[in-house]
Image (cartoon, rainbow over all chains, first blue to last red; front, side, top):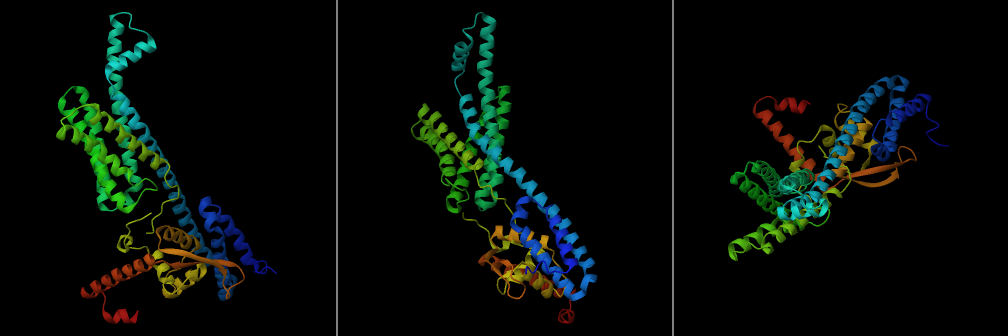
Length: 290
Length: 123
């Protein structure tokens, strides 16, 4: 005979009600622990029945309802927070993938853009159209570069949110400063439209520091392995562009594309790789023990 | 994946987590046995519901403080299979660190004459 069908009526009714209450928990939590919670509740019912008979049930139910109300809210809030965070992380990953593409496209020569417009829309028929082509060839790359840097900045902030708890103090500091530098770079880029050289320099300095501080995180990542894969990529990405640039400008005094555009493209490709890691990261619900 | 969590980074613990760790300190137990142990060691002052118990267990498993042992029936209750839990090494260190922290607080309370030795023994 199933021992549960031999339970007194008060216990059978209580178990049925508790089973209904369990439906208020998130499905994943219910699936993992619902059976065990129902089992524990039945044990508590049996214990109460043995000790006090049906008269003990109001106190048991008062405790159970309070516990149910509090923990349903907790679990539902946890679930909602996790879903928001997971969506944000995925978006940040895509931002890190698309940002470098936009940035590298925006850093193209305006003359190339004028050629592209001419190829698409035909050569400008009169002076007015030439002015339109000239304006567009300067504005579009600027907007693309700025948008690209903004996306990279958002991506690094997302990277920080996803991995700050998985690295030590040094790695966390590196990511914080990298994210802050990327924001400074965006601001510098935005204000550089005024034509002031200083803002352009702030954009470049912020851009370089974004990579250098990412390398600091990368050094910690090599040691602590916070990423699900490619833990050497942040260090490589962070060091490659500033390192090659320094080599070209300081040691060889060469401003050729081999020491500027190509290393930058490689590091931006590295950022896109980190974006892939971020958006395809682990989907398990993060939890804190406290 | 390597994490850099130290026992102190978990402190202070919530009463629920601390009591669950204490309940598991002397060996593995299933959910209801944990509840009974907590009620016993707190002299009936802490009564934990199933939601608090399994919500805490979920978070403690994720943090690596406890681990699942196996599912087997409790010979003293019935023939249902129950999931048993036990402390991990980290969980043992965390409960020790929290106990030290609380003991230091008690010492502080004594030094400020908020708590007399007599009262402590009496309780």
